[in-house]
Image (cartoon, rainbow, N blue to C red; front, side):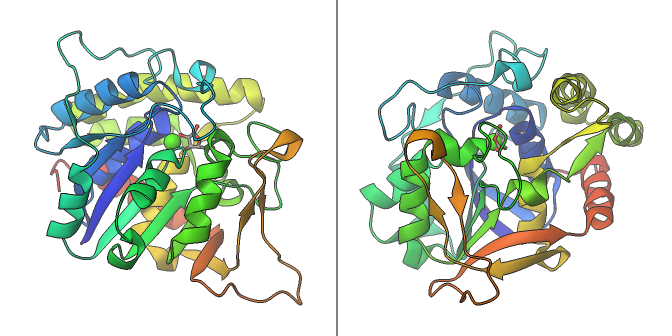
Length: 312
Ligand code: BDR
Ligand code: CA
């Protein structure tokens, strides 16, 4: 069982990742940190609250993360991919409003629990703040899984940058420089974590869990959005779900240990760089980049976890 603190910006694939974590018997969510990213922090918070309500898990604290990136600029959101409110066509009911727990409570959660894994599937601003505001969390937290970066493949927001590292490259660089035991799950693997409507329908037929019943409308929107970007695509990539899958099933992926640098300005902003030359050396710190994963294993696990009716 992995004790996780999940940093997220739901967002469609973040929402599916939250549901996957709630239903996965190998994962215990200690808290969810809500931040700006795919949508505003306020919207992300209401979306998290709605998912937790549908899943009957309102006991999980939602921690208030950051509203804007380290640069102070106004963040760009992505309604064309995730919908105006972040859940495709679905809008959380008016009476569902997320109540935020103060960011400082994260330190109590970290102190009171053992063997914590941090999973950040959004912009890294809140995680950087956790490090900047507090004691040496890197020494206390066992490992960090980050969805971010693009190695040897094009980016998804610029020719070379992936959205999470692009959103706050200063924070991403701070995290990669100061923390240890980091596992980065980049676009070169997540682009291939494709889920189709057939998978979703199959799951929905196996369970009447209310949190699964909203999945078809949400995924239809996401898949249509991806079709506009990549005509002919049969499904859409669940970047954030793959990150959680590899966190609990590391043997299903292949990694390389390398230092990572993020460009922080101008045209290269958000670009992730690692040295993959034959002559290059492993990083001094334990920083690992996923290069490949077992797609069939991912699909089978996704269907099994999402169709189980038990919350973990
Ligand atoms: C990442 O950016 C967001 O749009 C997704 O939720 C994912 O975390 C993919 O680049
Ligand atoms: Ca995300």
